[in-house]
Image 1 (cartoon, rainbow, N blue to C red):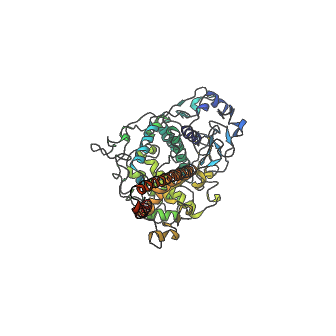
Image 2 (image 1 turned 30 degrees about the horizontal axis):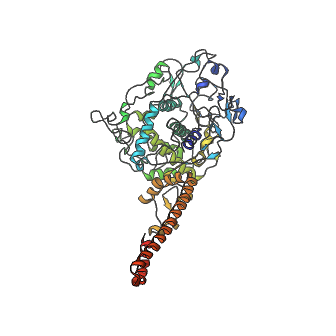
Image 3 (image 1 turned 90 degrees about the horizontal axis):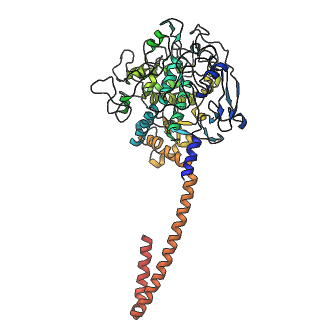
Length: 571
């Protein structure tokens, strides 16, 4: 059993990988040759080529034109990613993945990456206390564990020398790696000179890639937690904030309550009160023309509800979400924060969830939660410092999934050209290695190996009208004496409590069936032995009684047999 458990964990650890930057490539040789094709230890060849897992090949970037929002060229390392650093990387075959093709792509696992596995993300408010505490302990472990496979760059490519003679990379813990990635993808462009930057640039926000990029971000984060904990059943929980009037997860039992002495700080009763944030001073970096180097910059800040109420008058409602999901167009107009009637722009929070029109100066939907937190999470570049970020974006991703299932858009619905830089279909997501195109993740999460508890499909006992509610199939309803049940407390229990355990049981049904058969066999043998033993005992008793009370034998025998029969039936 111990060997089996170890094998399962080992197989699962073969999950997707991310960048900034793979250790084997973060050196002078990698920068000079511009090649990042690390050896897979399984066969000792680059990209696992000898085993047919992948091969080292030239990176071909998209030449489709970008929108007018960024008028510069050749001055930012993120342009035409990843060519400023590498022009040859591993291309993995089949279901293989990772920077050296030694792992599996999302949703697949096993030695040959041939087994599809679907995990369920659940509402953190309906998880048990033990599960909530485990999640928090995993976050803290990630915050205190140096990542074994990745480092960050602490300087621009030009600062490292033409031939990479001055590589500038640094270790970072697993949690802060993702904080840094979110900073790097959204930072300003240095134009030369203190404070001289181009601000209207973001490779993961304010246009089409907002949803696919954050989807990949969460998948990577999920897989990294599985690796460092060995818990291959781990999934990121979500916070369903529809109709919320306060930060329901901001308690000491969850993401940290408010400090009674300083409302901008986290309560000392929470482990998050000891966390130090990184990458929260963009103006300082711009003045120094320097990248964030992941040095601690002070405590985690949060003061939910003490924000500018003119900018965010209220949190999103269920009606807001339904309106957004009902919009048929993913992108419109210039495909930026001024787009009208765009599902992406409404969900991201630059347009009204009541009219669909852009609302400069206000923050709605996704953006409103960031502003509402009024702290570290309220600044785009440093927002991932707050672990509430994960719960929030998991729910945003579930709304994206609702829209995909409702409209089933063709890939052509995603902009192929003329979106702001970094957002076209064929653009590789900054700063991930291995490489992922934006358009490749404009698809259902079913293809990526995960599901949301409240979006379970008809095959799991739920049918859905994605623009309204989620209801049980009518065939189920007689069991509960109703003709039709829409989303209710009982259904939430089935979806978010019972279903995940049933899914786990489904994964080990062979063992459960074998145990059941073996148990039935043993029970049958014991019952047979008891019956035989009792019959012998009764015959002995009858013999003794016949010898002692000869004339009364028929009466006692009849009575004894009737009583025996009744007792056995009751037992």
